Length: 469
Ligand SMILES: *Cc1c(COP(=O)(O)O)cnc(C)c1O
Image 1 (tube, rainbow, N blue to C red):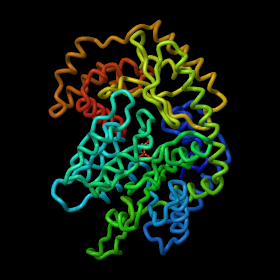
Image 2: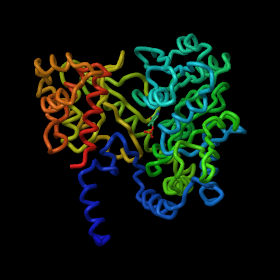
Image 3: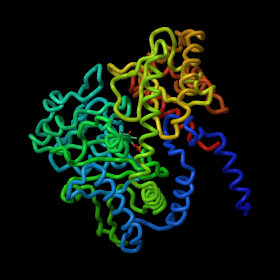
Image 4: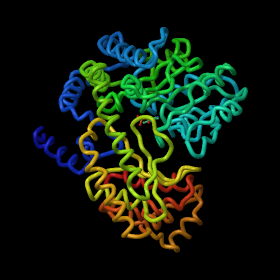
């Protein structure tokens, strides 16, 4: 046997190669309260319950209690309307999947109506559960859902209408009351995806921000998702899906007594469910409480506002839409390459997330701002300005015309392993050394590929990554 301390040392060494999850330098994927006791508490609570199994709430009543507590907390934050029930899931995607699954019924060819800015989790839901997607264009400038167009898209096949509070890509709030009214008028369910905003917008409102209504107080809203592992600052692996009534929730529950084993009874996609993430979330939510979240929201709001106004002062940068909460997407003028700006930020110790162009949304960089960003806004903005200067000086990223031609001729449906290997090599991803430091040339090449080809290429790449050596 390997001594535990050696195994842990090896794990630490592996983790040292990751992006930092603390300190506010990684502006995607991670949510940092900046409070060290939040992490130690979450870890301790996780360890206390990780062997318990949510598969059977009668065997582990502690998990039942904690789940009911978290659902009650989320429900009180998101409207405090009586009758709301829910489920704790493994993450935002699972919450969105279940909202769609609950809405699906036995009518032929059911569909969901969603703005083009809705999270890709709904694309996954439609794919998995066999629903048609009706993607409705958003306002090309504000990136907010167009309620009239959404209303017009609802028909007899519609089982669910979706809107975001706010959207991930631009951080803008869809006009929830108008969209919900249209759904209600047609007797169709309406899901508000508040995965990223649900635990912070109510606190922004308490701090005086003008937050238009988006929760269960809006007539017509039938379900809301809110992730605990985002702005509730809980360890990864928890989200809440709320339903306006138990009746609406029933259809994502699953039972099977038709086999010789235990009667399988599931509230979510998972069957065996670790008590770890649930207990960790319960502990963090109980520790921080409304006062703690209000303080964290105040720091975050200050950080977002400083970073946003700082970006507008950097020559050539422009914020997309009018973001309402903690996300900022900004684009640049033609004088420099944004992917290069991301690389330059990386070289200065910051991770910012590139987003490809989609419909009216130009290529841009996306920031997820959390409480830990408060205090280093000036440093961030100085490095951003320096990165833009460096990108201007470096000039445009030129995709080799021969490679671009090769890519343009690829058909995602018939891409062969040989073609893919050739492309990886051309893109600089073919080596055994893992990812290159500079992603701009690869991103520039990927940007030339239409979305279906980009999906296929990146999935091939993923498969290559997930191949044990
Ligand atoms: C993050 C997010 C999701 C998906 O959540 P995961 O936890 O990554 O599965 C869905 N919708 C929105 C708006 C999000 O921001």
